[in-house]
Image (tube, rainbow, N blue to C red; front, side):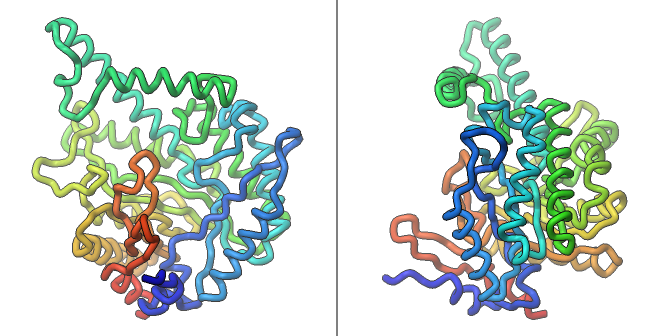
Length: 393
């Protein structure tokens, strides 16, 4: 069977409208490999630049306004070997990279996101800390009882296998990067590294504005709807401070902020709580809670006075009817915010097609379009037409 052309799928569902596609189509990625600096291993690939020039032209030819992201987690090897996202030199390297991209492609762009989920390192550090504490306590309890640790926590974990994998990963890292613990973008971040990322963003923003002052610049943050149950107020406030508030000095000059939200997080007197008993869960094992997006937009707008763009929001599910319901409820919340004067300029669903979801591979079904991985045939789901319907309103 011949492949279905993606542009035909988008046209048939109302998503190829020049005036409206920017608010609907998930942002185009343009993470050009080879961030430059004085390092002799760092150089640009002109073929990669031309590839992205063609991508941008293709988007525009089909009425899609590309919002380019310069960094979505991956970094070149030479940068990591220099110390990665804990090294002071990365600020200048990233600035130089952003300037080069704008010199090459800036005249064709209106929106640039410097860094995707700039707060991800701190979130991963918090998650890793919780898992380490859980593993240590499980091991102690098991040792005291003369049993293995696996059955002592309410999640499917093989602690021995995890430790073995960590050992092998450290060996591979040492061979590739010269250190068993390289500071990649999604490593556990130190407080100093966290602020280094924001300084890199600010430096890149200034470089972009110097070359293309008319281009709107921002970054994106992964934000949860943090809800305090009785006694959990202090935990929720501390989490919001870490997840959002302490970044404000570094983004207050930005033209926009990309809001990325999928669910809520509950806090009680002892800290973070699991999803409520009986709550519907996504394939990612977090709660289906589309109302979270409106709550987060409103809370962000209290402190950030630039434009807001929902740069990620979606649901991983094999049942497209659930996706349709999720999109409708989430967009109801966005429309309520707009009606109240909050400057929400766009909503981009994650993701257009069922995608490679990092460690979870292709198992998570976020997409509005299904992909047969053997034939690469792409088939629009009903949810694509539902989202396209909003572009026509």
